[in-house]
Length: 231
Image (cartoon, rainbow, N blue to C red; front, side, top):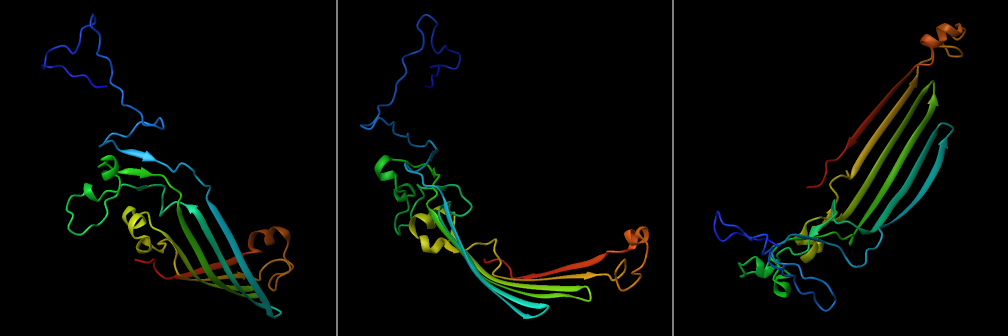
C-alpha cells in the first residue's frame, strides 16, 4: 500500500486517525491473486520434470600390428526436459510477429486474457538437445621410446536456443548447432622417452644419484586443429 500527502508539506495521516485500511485484491475461484499489469514476474510450470540425459556409445578396436591399433567409436547422447539455450528462463509473454499490427501489446499472448504488457520470465526445463559424434583414434605404440596417438572427431550438438520469440512461435528456426562445439577436431599427441638413464640405451649403468638427475626425462607435445564455431 502506498500513501501520499495531498500537498508537498502536508501530513499523510495523524496518529489519532491512523492510516486508512488497506485495499486487498480479490482472489479468483482457485484462491490465487491475479498479477497486476506492469509488474515483472517470474513463473514456473505447475509440474516440473527432472532433466534426463541418455548416453550411448559403440566402440570397435582392432590391433593392426604389434605396435599399431585403430579404434572407431560412435558416441552420442539425448537430453530431455532441459533448459532452452544457456537457460534458465525465457519471456513467455514475448510479442509475436503479426503483419499489420503495430501495437506490441496486442501481439503479446497474455495481453488479451489478462491485460499484461510486461515480460514474464518462465523458468521451464521444456527444451531438448542431442549430441552425435564419430571418433577415430590411431595409436602407434612405443618404439625406440616414441609413442604417437592421433584422434579425429566429427561431432554435432543441436539444441533449442534461448531466444523467446523462436521458442514460442517458430521453434525450428531457433534450433541448430550449439556454438561451443567444433564440428571437426584433430588432436595429435606425441611422447618421446629420452634414452638416457639406468637401463636405457645411453649411460645405462650410471649410479642412482646421477640417474635421478638426468635419467627418466620425456618430451611431450600436443597439436590440436579444429574448425570454427557456427554462426
